[in-house]
Length: 94
Image (cartoon, rainbow, N blue to C red; front, side):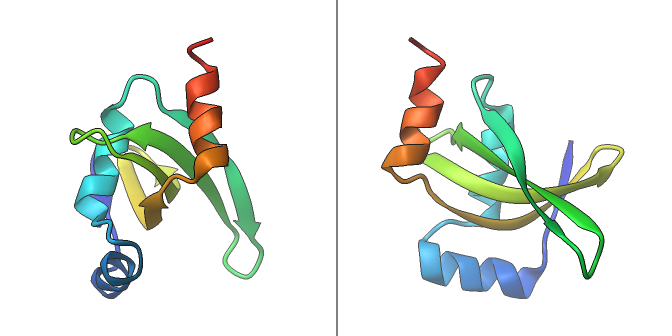
């Protein structure tokens, strides 16, 4: 799987949320990640998804991404998961 992102947006995300898009890409390797549809951007016809997963450093993140096809994923935003998202992730282990 390959990842891409807007470098300007990645810098802004790092500044606002303290999460790099490189670290965000690690959640796709978490075998326990949870993916759901996020929203549909009417103006661009783009369907966005979100994934909750653990990085290699054991930080639980919520990452918004676009899957335009093939093996390329475009990361849109990333932040640490909030309590509600953490409960969604942990519910699969009950």
